[in-house]
Image 1 (cartoon, one colour):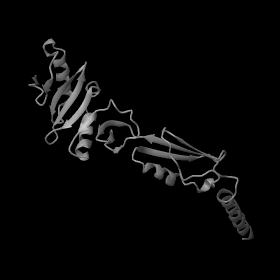
Image 2: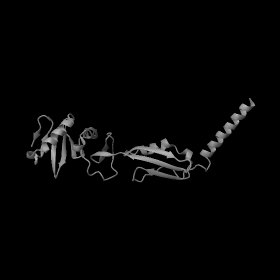
Image 3: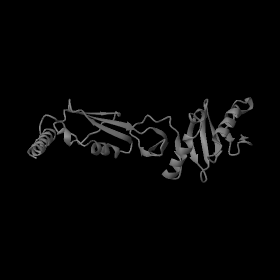
Amino acid sequence: MKRQSLIISISTLIFIGAAYILGWSSLFTVSSIEITGTNVYLSTSIKPGQKLARVEPRVVASEFQKIDWIESADVSRNWLTGKVTITLVERTPIAIYNNLAIDRSGASFTLHSQDVFDLPHIQASNIESAIIAVDFFASLPSNLANTVRVVKVANGESYVLKVQRNNSEIELRWGQNIDNDLKSKVYFALMVLPENSKVMRVDLSAPHAPIVK
């Protein structure tokens, strides 16, 4: 019985000592903070000299995930060096709607970079329609999507695309978000025909009966 009490007492002392060292002692404090994954200057609530044990990774990560253009944040602590590393993943825009960027998941966020000039612009009456249009755009074959400059939402979920072809722009009346692979194949088949070298509009809403103007 005495031995059991002694073991409990020693365990309690060890626990108290460890808690003191981690939470109060100057042995384990934040020596530096590194933020990776972005070129944008961001501040953090963590300060050098702060007790490392009191840096809660989930809480710190949530601070950064509140920023709309950040997709995820991961926080790690190095107990040997005292370094705290915050690893961020930025959202990747695939289209622009007004002054907002939209990523492949449909999340909209503010632009913090102007390096988006070659992204297609969405023309829609509201952000909800724009997000649906981005989902449609993401479903297009890459060889076509890479040439799209504008995605216009027409009536309902009917779409009109403006695509770049050589030094000219062609309007594609796409219609509904169906038969996208077939419509793409029909479009490229039409474009290789010599008589279509100067066309300005192609109606693919009925891919088995396309109209070229």
